[in-house]
Image (cartoon, rainbow, N blue to C red):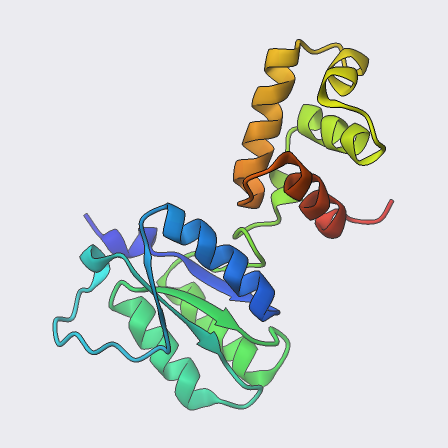
Length: 175
């Protein structure tokens, strides 16, 4: 079984986004380490659950090579860079040859992964409703509403409902 496919590969725009991804990965058992160079002489480092992170400049092809090599060896990668820069495009292309590359905080856009009930609940919570009022308005039991909100918190990689609502508001597409 190839464990490299399970290693996370994220390209994010800001250090704050990288911190959010790294916190989520830490909760999933990954060990974060700054920089993209691997000191371990063994080729396959997937078993170490190591995720390397750092910033990549717009024309920093040397760091791109290090990040891609680390990903090829089974390490996770969280890179902060401009995805439209030459280095960012090269990084995404090269990492894409290894496996799925997640652009953004939670791999795919978490808002796209929300089910309609979660979107409706988060919209109502953002408008000031309580969970109980939002559940009643959406014809859900309070228990179901709480489960849907808990799933949304997990998607956004946050701990509180308030943080989930704020993340939802930041990331959703304007209507």
